[in-house]
Length: 109
Image (cartoon, rainbow, N blue to C red; front, side, top):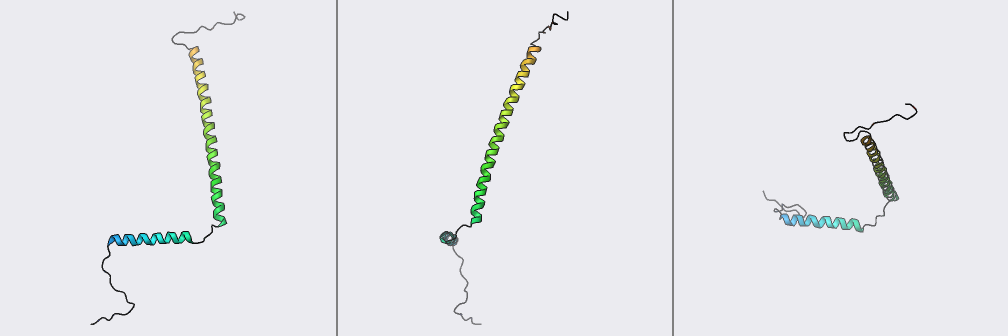
């Protein structure tokens, strides 16, 4: 059976070199990116608004985090000072092995 070649029929190709395949695919991707960059597509106003809103929310969150961290550190310092003063008081009352004698006021005697 003889096969006649039609003018626009497909023919089976030999296996292609992998490097050529990678090169051709890279060229196609570069072409697509350049085509998208050159297309006169203006940004929608909604996208611009959303991006500005994201920036505003991010700034507020950053400021809030800073405020919380500074207040936490201030509370931590305050608690540390209070605890150390209480420890000093307890050390004075119950000194190292010696007992303090608390005398009664002169009127009660």
